[in-house]
Image (tube, rainbow, N blue to C red; front, side, top):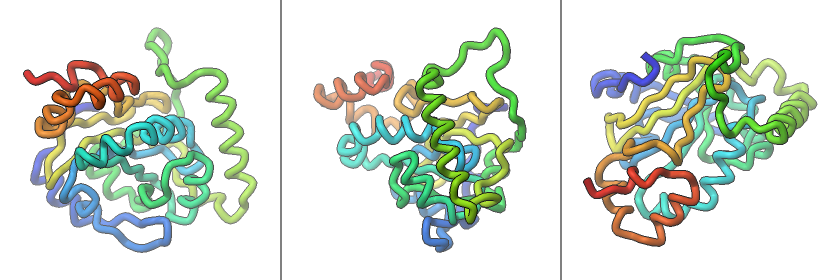
Length: 226
């Protein structure tokens, strides 16, 4: 199921797997959400920067809010680590928050097994971030990436789908979404009541934070006291 929550035992096993940072260093997956709540965005491949470009733009407006709440956002791709720096340049997302899972151990362990190039099915509403201008910009970014021959073949399988999870602190998950097609994304700033209770209950008492979150399309129900 695309939204089934991985249990503690599954996360405990996956926490010992290793991903790679922008310098090629191995990083234990579990260390990324051991002590804080983290939105983990699993991207399709390192030549696809459309979603993360917009994610980066919104997150930059809320970085202080998230930092104070001990919440972070990271991206994990299915390719090798070498394209990370270029991907960061293209999307504006900090390279220190981008990792690579070339073995697909974490991808598959969290149930992201689908490989397809299918787009939004007929009759299903297309994601709001997929405007014509943004798509053209994305194609330009991909072309820029392809200009660098040393990265070709290291971007990851273009048919591999990703997803979004809210993990931590520790081996717990409060939100899971696995893509069913290439345009099937959830917007992290509109995840209704999906953050751990201690996070959104602390936000609800701060009017300024509430207004910032509403401006980033985070639903008011996320910051309710109920």
